[in-house]
Every structure is written in structure tokens, then in C-alpha cells.
Length: 400
Image 1 (cartoon, rainbow, N blue to C red):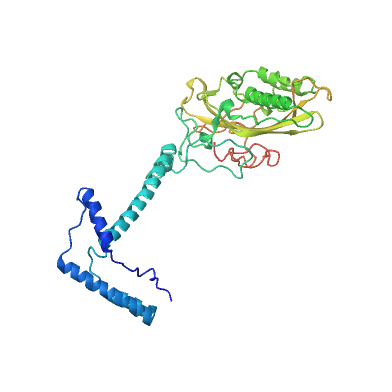
Image 2 (cartoon, helix red, strand yellow):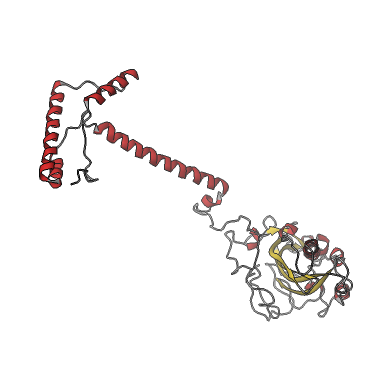
């Protein structure tokens, strides 16, 4: 038969006289501040009587079984006082729980404050009147996203002070730093150094054709052209011809971003960029570098003409596959790049104009080029590759 009380009825035991005397001595040695007063004769008599009842209860349990014992414990009400000590024992238990809860709350509060210190937007974005869209920079892209980016919290037209207002590009990286080169390794019989060279020069080509300020103002992409292999048939000659005398069949905008300096100028010196670069082995002695990037250009009318503070954005997406060939296996120039394939799309530029420049349409004006006949497209949607989802014709944009 078990004599252990159930959890919801803990048994209170009295303090032996020896323990009580030891407790009094310790209290006196500590200065007497916490020493309890000696119980009165009436209290000692009550204590003895209760001890006798406890002893009688214990004998009844042995003789009559456990259920009667618990009935006895429910019926007997011991006075709250120094004998059973519920005042200090239960109070200490409550204090212990309170300290534990307080410690937990303190730890949670400290962690919350630390998180808010690092990411204040977690709190500020939830204040009344605040938009819930974060403006923190996006992590680098490593593959095509699964969908187009959503709307941004800061709506409205772009301004000179905030040229990327209302655009997902607000969270994109800027300029050449946004074109991150992956870690090189040997592939296709090409050494790690060869692969690193192919990656580095592909980035240089992208910068030279899409980010060089002189080229954007209508200049010649000489630095980019110097990276191309002169032994690749037609590539250099066709590109030079298109830059010299552009027309519908010879359009440099397939590879190079340029604006007419007499018409527009960059609104500031920031171009937003989003995309990624990968590499793979081709045939023996060939490494292929694939680059897929979108560039966002904020523009104003040149010379302050006709509302020089009105900002338009033109968006260009480039999809390139460059190759570096081993001259011992191919007819190629050492260290020079070849263009295996190229594809591009432009957004917010006049249709049907082939003068070698992009011509943005400003929010306060209407298009003057050929009418748009293609579908509506989202220039920020990078979820599909250009080769899989190439828009036919010149259409309209859902946003800029």
C-alpha cells in the first residue's frame, strides 16, 4: 500500500524541535532580523495536540487503507503558523516562480530589443501609417525567381531626389558591384585561372556596354569591344557597323545601352542592377559564361527642357552567353571572349526607332513612335528566361 500523498494534496509535516532550535541559532547569528518569535504556551499546546492527531491518523492509515487517510487529510485543517510554515514555504515558492518568469521575460525582452536594433523596420513598419514593404537591400540573386516582385510601399512617381520611388529596383544593388562573379573552378579542360578570366571579362563587358557613363551618354563602347575576339567571324565588324550607321537590321542596342545626349540625361549617377552569372563546360577547351541582368536607368530631359525635373525610367534586360576558348584547340585569340548567344528586351522606349539610342517616354507625355502592337509586360518580372518567354513586337509596360 502506498503512503505517498497524491500531487493535489501534499502532506504538510511538522518541524522537529532539533531543526527549530538550529533555525533559531542561525537566525540569531545572522543578526536576529529574521528570527521568529518564540511561540506562546497556547501555540505549543496546539502543536502537541496536532502531533497527536497526526500520529493517530498514521495508525488509522495502516489499519484502514489509503482512501480513509486522504479523507482525514481533507478534514483536518492545520492553523497557518510557524509549525507547518506555509507562510515562508509557499511564499518562497511563489517568489521562485516569479523570479523565473521575470528572468524569462527579461531574456525575451533583451532578444527583442537586440533584433529591433539590427532590424528597426520590424517595428517601424508596423506603426500606423507605415507601409509594410521593407526597403532593405535584397540578397544577391543566384537563380531566376519564382515570380515577379510585388508592389513597393513607397508609391508615386519618381523624383530627382528619389528616382527609384515606386520601383522594385529600390532594393536592388547599384552599378558594377551588383554584378557578382561566382567562384571559379576548372571545367571542360579549362583551368581555374581560365574560368576566372572568362568570368571577370564577362563582367567587364557588361559594365562596358551597360554602365559606362560615357557609353550611356552616346559614346562608343571601346573598352568592351577590346574584350571581343577579332577572330570570331562577323561579331566585331557587325557591331562596329551598327554603332557607326544604325538601322533596323544593324541595331547596336542588341548589346549596348545608349541614350541620345541631346534628348535625355541620367538622373543622378546610380543605375540599379539585378541578376546573376553562372558558368559551365562547353566542348573540350571551352568554358561558357551565362549572364542574365536587368538594368534600371532613371532619366530626365536634357538641359532642363520641358520639365527637366520629371523622371522617366527605362529598363533593359540582357541575356548573354560568352565563351572563352583554348587557342590550342580552337581558332581563337588567347584571353579574348566570343559571343555565343545574346538576347535582350527593353522597356519604356519609343517603338520603331532605330537610330542607335533608347528614347524613354516621360510620365507627362505620350509616345510619338510607332504604335505598340505587342503584349503588356512587367519589366521587373525575371521569373522566366528571355529565350523561353521572349515578347514579340513592341508592346506596353505595366509599370516602370
